[in-house]
Image (cartoon, rainbow, N blue to C red):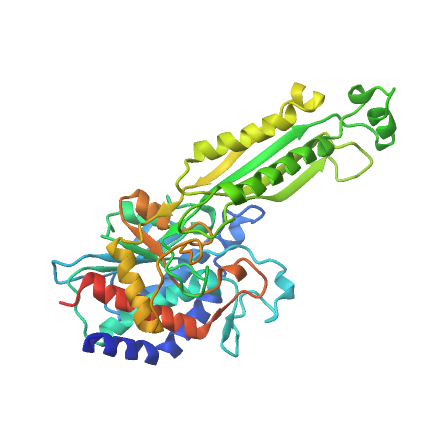
Length: 439
């Protein structure tokens, strides 16, 4: 540790009250992503921008030049840049300002999802973990460097972006990159709590959203004996679409169990890759059980192995669905429809890459213990999707590292541990000092 690093870490510790206060301020702003299903955009549009408007004077006080990037003027990204003296590598710290909508908004222990209350060492509120604490930690890094008079050789960027929760990178992270704010590497400060708090996550799975739909024939529910018993008219009188869908659900559960044995990656724990049914719906056009449902659908989140292509994964799942359909006379004649609604590509940066080694060393210095190389026993994967993908697609090596617990993101009573915010800021600051180099 250099004298400069010692001074920066000490200053980050002194800044903890301001960091916590900024986190609370950001959490109190409703920045629900306006594109989320079931959300009236007019009620939340502009919240993302208000978060960034709150951050902008903080960025200026931290000595950053600020710029706005806004393909959609109602949803403005904020970029702060600490210019280097030249000759060093540049680094971006990235965080998104949008949140999901709250679940059980009346059941929060603090009375409201936006009541940023501190209880013990926990700061509660929607977005506290995902990921407004990270936005505050990013500012803390820049402010500590400014307060300590540190000059870097390479540029340090803060990218505070919109749209991540709905993969709207075209108006968020990708828009920032395409506006010219490219760097030699990027750290996305998502909550990297898997497999342990403040993990260095160098890879993420791919994500596919799948809808499987089947059709039936609506009829009075009292006709069920005629539709299913020997000697009845069978499908000519009615077909229950829900019952035709359930064998497909079971078959994909069997395929998921096979994946637990066959889908492996050296940076993931065994059994990570899954096919999760998260939405199930069936009806006859009316929410009333007196009819056979003539339509049924199930929607899945598929987490796939990053070294497979999405085309390979889609083909495997569609083959399983088609095999089930061949066993049912109705489905043979009326095949299920597979619709692929989203594909969030994975990212992967080799552990040996200088960015990963810089981050691992910075964490080891602050934590006082080395970071083990990734293996199935000590995985190094992010537990979800994040914007590191879009830096990598732009040719910029990227990893994820930040405070918070992914297990409670998108949950009632979301919170972040206050000491983790400061610890993350310290690690990010050391990484910036190492990567960008002191002038």
